[in-house]
Length: 317
Image 1: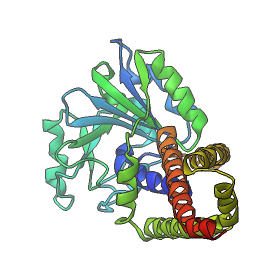
Image 2: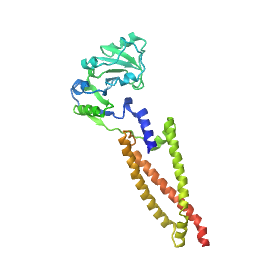
Image 3: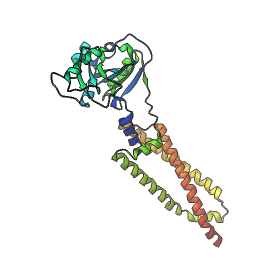
Image 4: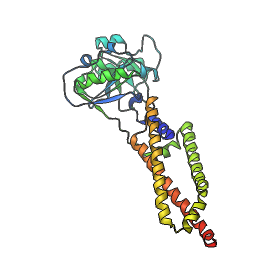
């Protein structure tokens, strides 16, 4: 359970999380056209760490509110005071038509960067940043969210370390023609396992450790079943057959497996409690079904093995 949850978290955070946002992020899509602009929906003065990314239809430009300065701190840039800068609260307050270029510019060539304002119809291009967050060739310019035409925005992402800020911003947007989108990563349990074998050292360690524990579990089940050789022998002497023994053993195994699955389900609540819940119930269910099948297969093999071993002993008696 812990290995699967860790592997899913790594895949989501490294590959599937949009714009490298945190787990708190919420995605919203427009379902109703309105004339409301960003200034009328989200007042940045009401938030401390809010991040809002607004994707415009058929455009290489996105609108951004970044009170964390998240995307500036995580990018490669030239530190050039009085030449390059980032969005400020004054920019947000005035709705200044400014933005920074991403991945398609040479930050050493300041004049060329500044000249991009005419092609993007901006008052000023304030910086040139390089970052994997903005897919190269997909997004060229990141603009002050309060300077874009918000009626053309098709999708919005909001994020903050403070979940209350996310809830408040989400409520504002849903009141103005947006609806939240469920997070559905559709990960395959098999692919998660195979992928974890080739990822970072922590995932590899956890996966190999889990395989080792599983191998130990299989070997111990054989030794444990050996304790019941005499019961199988006695059952055969008094007329018991393999089919009856198997049905009884299956029933007991299934009942114990169900109890263990219920206990394992409590782990999901622990993940939620520590805010580290990534594994979906679908993956959890597949793991439990896999373990049930393993238990039933091991039971069948062990019973078959020891049933045959008691044949000679039964004949002698």
